[in-house]
Length: 79
Image (tube, rainbow, N blue to C red; front, side, top):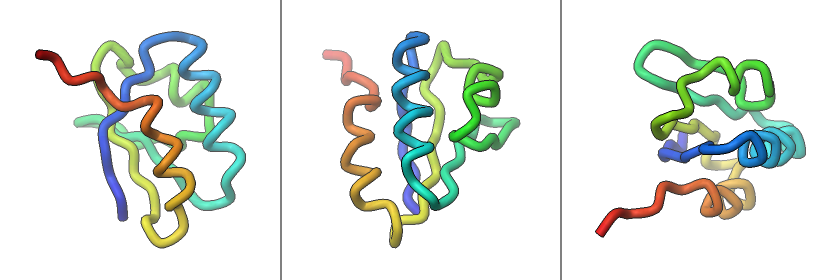
């Protein structure tokens, strides 16, 4: 299982992310301290607190191409 933090800071970012997740057949989940939701559900994603990074879970053996595409959603490091 591969996990990393991503930031979905705008409506456009959420739409782009959900479209991306729906192009893959394996399960993709988003988690916070309390919740675990299907990342392919736009309603589920919008139900989360997106004001801070969320954790994504991907089966690492299936998701190498998908994981590479997650770079666009990674939090920007503060200097």
